[in-house]
Amino acid sequence: MWHEIVNDRVGGRPIAVTYCPLCNSAMVFDATIDATPHSFGVTGKLRHSDMVMYDRETETWWQQATGEAIVGELTGHRLTLLPAWMESWAEFTARNPGGLVMDEPDWRRAYGTNPYTGYDTSSRPFLYQGEDPPHGIPPLARVVRVENRAWTFARLRAEGEIREAGVTLTWTPGQASALDARDIARGRDVGTVRVRDAAGRNLPHDIPFAFAFHALFPHGDWMLAE
Image (tube, rainbow, N blue to C red; front, side, top):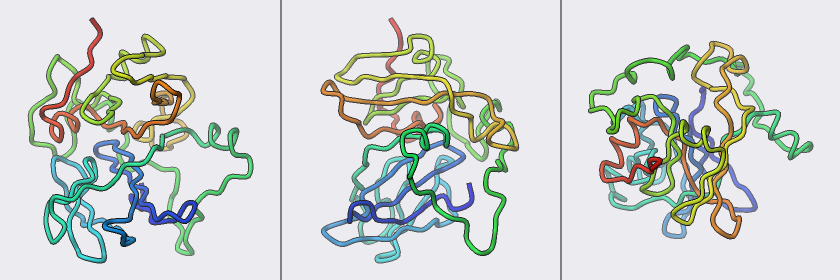
């Protein structure tokens, strides 16, 4: 909520961990472009309510939800999305009891608080002027996006597991919404999603709101229950 982008290295690989609260889009990118490590920041601009990033090396602007360069020297390039997922702190520490967490800076911030109280149960997205998603899907419904396909959380929660298009999606309870209560830990349970291929390997994916998928992937496929 406070930083929206974290630049780091994992296993020697430069990465950018990004989160856009208005779209609920949380994505981790390989920060190497044409063999050169890049560092990313927030422009303060929005497009379709989605964060526009910039790289400090060329000052190119990047659409966070697609990883595509949209203004500047690298226009047309696309960042490589890495497998990552959103989960609760309890889930993370259970898997990684010695795991690391980013420390607070010396100038302390109100970590754990949500400045967008009740946002994901609103009828309309903040600052969004585009059309609603098709099929009667609420604009602020969560979806699981894998490339150009999207599955609704509502369907996934109902079925528990979905296997189609070479993808296996699972849903389990236990993760609080970051965009519900003022205190994030008290947010309603929206659950944790894992996405794997047929061999059980983690797949790159995103958990945006339906309006963001519709706006930024206008030709995407909605994977609806028969």
